[in-house]
Each structure stands twice: as structure tokens, then as C-alpha cells.
Image 1 (tube, helix red, strand yellow):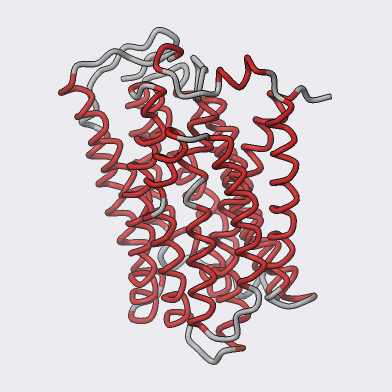
Image 2 (cartoon, rainbow, N blue to C red):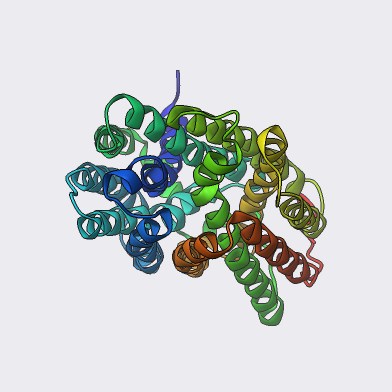
Length: 400
């Protein structure tokens, strides 16, 4: 039976799952149902997701500030309940504008998770790579499940149910979270407070080195955000077009997308294990190089070849995610860590939001082959930025 600390960690992981699931339900609904129901092209329709991703970015810093000033557990409760109610309400949309309003509300509450949930995950831990990787796997399974769950519900019930049922589940989990937090011991609650005196595994760096590390984290995270959004958001549509000979229904497309995302999610665990034991810079450079090479292979592929390469590049894309969070956990003090995560994710999610019109524009003019060429160049930019990481020494694991 789970003790309350492990139950809390499990709920934080489930929260990450739901966070990414809610942000990508619309991607599958747009590709497989709404473009036909509302008589719009895929490129025109996905533009209406932009407000949601802008909210995902804009509200990240206020969420981190409130968590550090008020309560991280309180903000997580707001996350579960708020995003669930917003998703259920979005199912009432009858026009693209109404959908945009609903997605904005979802994005506003989704913004809470990364600066708050991840700060809770790393707090008090010396080795953060594996916990962050486990948490990341849950997030990526949320990405995968969004495509599968939405596709199943579209085929069997309708697109509105894809927003309603996850929303109700999230509200119920919010109530469970309240009970778990209330039942935790006073000592455990004290350990969860952002207290600089309780920092574990934080490097002591001079100001210039810290600025250099955080700048590289932000640059690589921003470029990685463009790659992450372009692949996760568009993969159902990519599979609809390039797996047409093996995927003949919405459920089949969603199943292949789930397969690609689920296998790739293991990349986070592998990378999380490696960064606790090897040079972060070396691991990061290998991951970025794999992305660049596999994106360059994707243009022109169809069928099983496209599926295999897609699994490969998603493995590398997901593998990058824990590295930046591990670096922040090693250089940022606990009492302002949530705000550092908030800054990182604000910039990251701003890039993500702005990429949606870009995806639609590129797809409408040249198709996805051109998009993958561009992503290969962006991955090379990540590789170059990571090559400038300074050498860092960490007692539990090398972190250069």
C-alpha cells in the first residue's frame, strides 16, 4: 500500500499526464473530426489553438510566483479542479471562436503544472534525474493518450466526449489530492516548503557561470520547445497522411500515434538514468544529434519506414525533456526554483504557441517534408548551444 508521500508523488505524475493530455486533445479532434464538421482546413483550424498555448506560457510565471509565495500544494489543487472544469466546458463549443475561448481556459490552468509540480518532484532529492524522468514519462504518456483516447471517443461517441470525460476524471483526482495533502504529516509538509536551508544537491556556482548555464538551458529549451510542439501536435496528421496504407480509421491513426509516443517515452527514463551517472553535456549532445539525423531521414518516407523513424525521433525529442529540468534543479535554490522553472517554461511555451501558425503555414504550402527539414536544422541549433555548456562538478554524478 502506498504511503502518503508516495501517493503524493504518484498524483504529481498523474497531473503531468493530464496536463499534456488536455493540451493535445484538440490536435487530434481537429485532424480527425472538426475539420470535416466545421468545413475548415487543418491549417486554418489549428490556428484557434494558439490562445490556449499562449495562456500556457503567460500564466506560468504567475503560477510559479504564487506557488513560492502561497502554497505549492494549493496550486496543484487549483490545477486539477480548474483544468478539469475548463475541459468539460470546452465540449460545449459550437464555433471555432468558442473553442479558442475554451482552449484558453484549459491553457491557463495547464500553466500551473510545470513550475509547481516539477518543483515538488525535485525538492529534497539529491539524484533528480530518475524522478524527473519518471514524471516526464507520465507527461509523455499523456501526449500519447491524447491521440488514442480522443480518436477512440471520436469514432464511438463524438469529439465532445473527448473533452468531457478527462475533465471529470481530473476534478475527481483534485478531490483525492486534497485528501492526500491533508493527511501528510507535518514533517513531510515542512519538507515540501521552498526553504533554501533544505537544499539538496545544488551546486555552488559563481554568478557568471550560473547565468551562462541558465542561458544555455533557456536557449536549448526554446529550440526544443519548437521541436516538441511541431512533432507532438502534428504527428496524428502526419500519420494520417504518411501511414494511409496501414492506418485506415481515426482509431488506427490514434493507435499508431500512441505506439510512437509510448515507446518514445522510455527515452526520458534512459536519459534520466544517464544524466545521474554521466556528463550531462555529452548525453545532451548525443540526444540533439539523433534528433537532427532522424528528422533529416523523415522526408519522403511512408508506411512502416515512416513509423519507425517517427518512433526514433520521438524517442530523442522526449529524451531531451528531463535534461533541462535536471540542470535547473542542480543550480537553482529551492526558495526560488519554482520561479526559475516558470521562466524556463514561459519562454518555452511562448515558442510552442507561436509555432502553431507556423506549422499550419508550412503544411499548407509545402507539406510536412519541409517541416522535418526545418526541424533538423533547429536540432543542430540545440547541439551547438549545448556544446557551450561549462564543466560542472556534482558530488552524486558528473554534470558537465
